[in-house]
Image 1 (cartoon, rainbow, N blue to C red):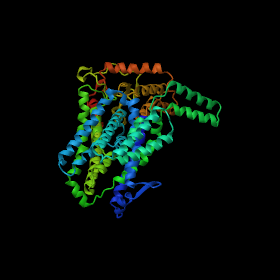
Image 2 (tube, rainbow, N blue to C red):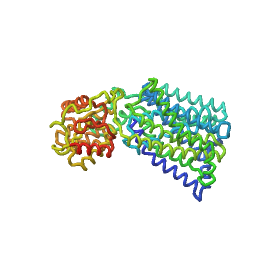
Image 3 (cartoon, rainbow, N blue to C red):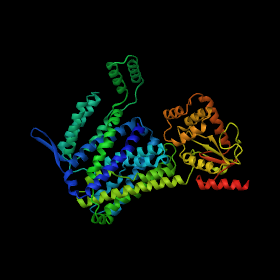
Image 4 (cartoon, rainbow, N blue to C red):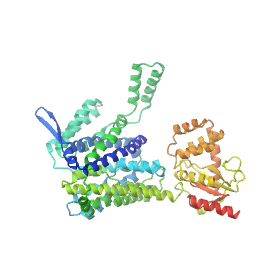
Length: 598
């Protein structure tokens, strides 16, 4: 579920970006007047004498965006019951980080706008845009491991829930109690259908639409209906009984194909999966590729002429929003992550390092969808409206750049992946415990005067970065040979051990180094299916002798442990542990020093 969500959100970022640029170009073109006039076209629905109408922008913001928030409700419901939000220790850190990432931006904004006409906009810089954040992380690539994506996704879910609560409490117009009572009765009717286990889609659609209209008339923002209904949708893990029935139906179709057997197999398989998950699968592409881009097209257009930009440059609203997104989000999330870790309230998925967390905190300052949403609710004055939007655009762009710089700096500094309980380096051996022998994987001449032994992990991002550097050194120095020994960090990298097993299977066919290169070139794609695909390309049977390959890997691990290895990558040059940087220049200098001293 998480992987599908990540693929959809990250893949849709380009569509969202195109919609945003289109809105800006339209609002600054010779046809700029048509931008506002188009989105203010009135459309409606008539039932006899009753007539209900909104302009196009409100149909998008109040109507289509209810589907967006409905999906948030589905995701929250799924994660609470079956996902990461079940584990209190895993949710504690991103939850406190999300809270810090809202309080600090709001505080910075109010410092600049307290008592002024822009004070009501304090909610604008509090939200994180999941789609844009995941899109930036996709560009970051291997520098951003899957555990960081999972951490930021959990943070974004909590962030969305808190933002919706803020919208309900602080950005609600005057209430109409008759409409509010009607909405409460309709919600009760939906809950009654759920309790009676009546699963008729038309009934839910009619009641849901009526609830949306009643909520809109009540003065409460109707998108709250979306998240409420999403939370109410059933989610469950497939039972053994349902899986058995589905398997039997599929087997019957396989043995005797027919239209009736196909329909029954489809029905059984669908029933094995919860309605929540099926709805997410169907609606995520519509939300990500249609609804949110249309929302951006309808709301991101702002005049960027000299007069508007001059006003924004000195506007406490624009400055407050940008400062809240760039500095507020970064500081709030960083401190909010440190506090629960410091006091032992929770843990991080995959034992992430601070360079990755700070990069994630920076890109979380990309506030777009919900920020623009709150602008529409907070400001009636068109000039203040535009200043807030310019602040969102500037702050989001700066946050993306800051995140990219942090990831790059942390990456270029090099480093190692190491378990949190690793011993200090000064207490460990500094020489290779087991000399290079015939059982090792060696690349280069057997009589090479310089030998580099690497203890590596195929899923370690630092090892992946080091891989082309070592190849470049070997290419430029024919008198250097490279030895690879396995040191999979199972607690950090769940696919490392399986990857090592497949590499050993390739070694049985004399193709270790080919598999070695493939695995490092595809670090983010190391599922069993991926590994089997790579093995098939090399005509290798990946699971032919798992026990033997595990034993072979254990030999490398034991030699590494005896040599003082506690993280990856770990290098030994001619039997002595290398303590320098993992960049091309540093390792090249170390090789030259060895050559001169020989």
